[in-house]
Image (cartoon, rainbow, N blue to C red; front, side, top):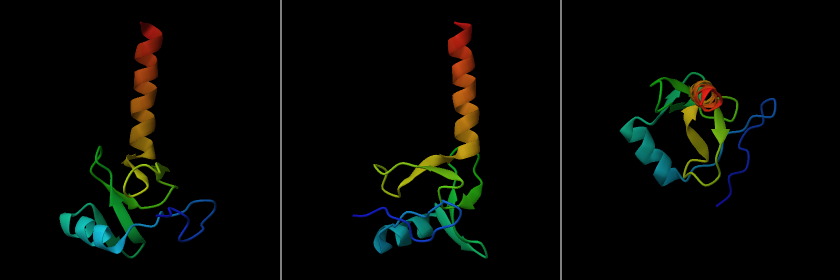
Length: 88
């Protein structure tokens, strides 16, 4: 299975997801189609963002090829964790 770019947009790409898996995720509400295209749900903030590497980190080992948290949520969590580590 290849997670290569479907569309190129300023270096961002949307990983390829098998059709059966995408249909299941659409049915469960993990992904939606909007006027912007395919969007993915961030499991942390609960908001939908475009399903590409501009908004989600690439994780090839994940089934969808994207992190479960959007970049903003992941950065906030990482920065808070690093502050705790430095304070200890």
